[in-house]
Picture 1 (tube, rainbow, N blue to C red):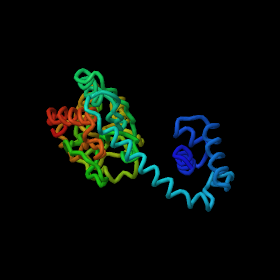
Picture 2: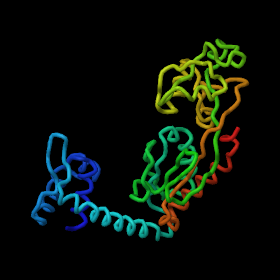
Picture 3: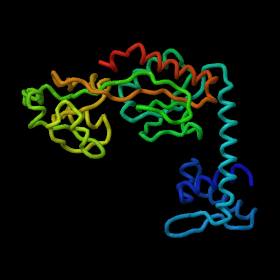
Picture 4: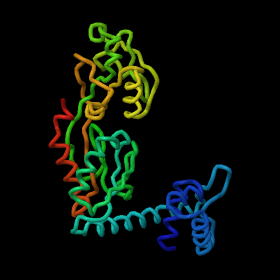
Length: 289
C-alpha cells in the first residue's frame, strides 16, 4: 500500500465515513471511495465494516492502523523538516488562535506584520480546540492557558488580567455595585457552571444567559444585558464599554506563542513568532493593568 492509500485509511477511521474523510482531505467523495477500493483490492480483504453508524475498522484494518499511523508520523516529520529549511521570510504561515483573539487584537498585529513582511501570507484557524502542531494542523499556535503540557517550543509572552465591563448606563443604574457586592446586577454567563462568580469581586450578582465566546459576552454587555468578566485587553478597546469603577482586576491566563521544534529554522515562521512576541511585549501594560 502506498502513502495515499494509508492517508485515506486514517482519514476514514478518524471521520467514520467516506464523506467526512473527503472533507478532511479536501478531495471529493469518489476519490476516497476509489482509494479505499484499491487498498482493499490490493490486500484482498475488507478494511472497514459498513453499518448505520458509519464505517468501523475490521480486524485486518485494526492490524494495519498502527503501521498507517507510523507512516503518517514519518511523512509529517519529513514535511516539517523540509519546511524548516527555508531561509527567506516568504510563503504561508498557518496560525491557530481562539476566536476571541481574532477580532481587533489580532487584526492590529496582522496589519503591522504585513507592512513589514509583505511576502508572508497568514492563514488563520480560529478555534478553541488545541491544534496538533505535530500533525501540521497549524505552524504556530497562539493560546491562552495557565500551562502547556505539549512537547512544543515557544514562550509565555505575558499574563493578562480579567476585569468587569459594562455600559455607562448600566453602571449608572446600579450605583452601589461595590458596596452590595453586585446585589441586583447580572453577570453575562459563559460555559460550565456558575461557580466562577464566587471568585469575582461582585459575587452576589446573578448570572444572565450563557454565551460561549468572549466577543459574544462583550457584545451582550454592550447591549446593556449585564456585566462581562473578560480579559481586559480584549474589552478595553470596545467603544461602548467601560470598566466598572472601583472593581479590582483578577488574574487571567498566560498568552503563549508555540511552534513545533522542527520549524524553528523556518524564516517565515520565525519572523511571525518573533514579531508577535515583540508586539505584545511592547504593549505589556495593555494586558497587565
